[in-house]
Amino acid sequence: QVQLVESGGGLVQAGGSLRLSCAASGMIFSISTMYWYRQAPGKQRELVAAITSGGNTNYTDSVKGRFTISRDNAKKTGYLQMNSLKPEDTAVYYCSAPWWGVRYWGQGTQVTVSS
Image 1 (tube, rainbow, N blue to C red):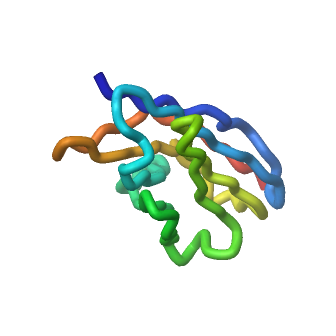
Image 2: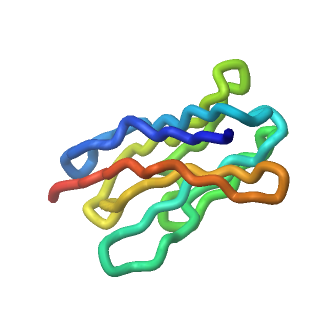
């Protein structure tokens, strides 16, 4: 079955960087769009970034210029490079991908940015 497993979260000071990874299995990763979402305490889950199979990317305004989404199809892994982190980036980050009409989600990884 399809599995998405995130890693790379942690505690970082404001201005620091983290790189999240999302390892996919059970699907043809190379032909699927991949998404990164985040959910902060008491807030709705929001879309952070997306990358299509062709490499086109989109970002929510609050992370433009700071975050970079990428993918390595050979490794079936997606990435979210996060630079210049701010306390308001603190959230659980989830990767997500559709496969055969079903949206799959990882378990999430906590990112905490201290001021």
